Length: 307
Ligand SMILES: [Zn+2]
Image (tube, rainbow, N blue to C red; front, side):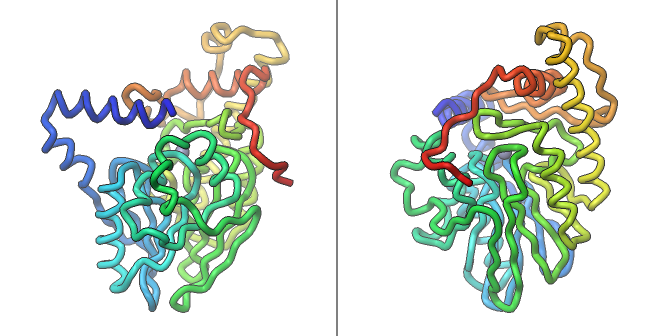
């Protein structure tokens, strides 16, 4: 709820300040980069989008933050692929990876984990009411595989981390993965404890991703990377979890933890500011580690036991 209201407020304020046309330009400006083989990435205001070109059309991973972006992503993807959109994956439920869904055809094939669909219904219900036709309509719990236009596409839910329901898409033939927000490349990550996220679990979740057979990595945010990039991010999470665990063991308050925490793996990490919503910086990630380690935040309950 707060998320969608926040983003609308953001748009209103920004629009008043710099003019609606400039906002429109910023929202709809997209940049395409070739990744490897038939895989492309689209950068814009929101999470990174992957496009796979197949013999029968496009496969798209994530749709950014606004319906109008979804429309542009669809146009671009279909131009790249030379055919219609055959399937869309939502890596997780956050608005900046899924709110562009309505820009695609109603009843398009949209794939996510069961948990992501649950989180959309529970934590983002106001956006999706009226857009039910653009919600995931094919869901899985752990593993998924499909062949589209002679390309094999696998998706796995490697475990909790950024949220409780993230998936990773593996473009098997082109040896590329899209991690969604399970990997922020040289940026401070969001850790959505209410939505099932966990710093502690995230470390092992990345081990499961590293077992996949790939060369190039499209992160949820930041530049295209590789296996080493994920390993570096995992080292950062290990250090961060140590901060939380130490604080819990020593009974430190949040303020004491913020004042004393030693982090080094984040020295070149960029901050991400989302006006009225949150600022992702060093204090933010330390707070989330402290909250998790001390049990200060309770995750939302899903309708059915997932296991
Ligand atoms: Zn996210």
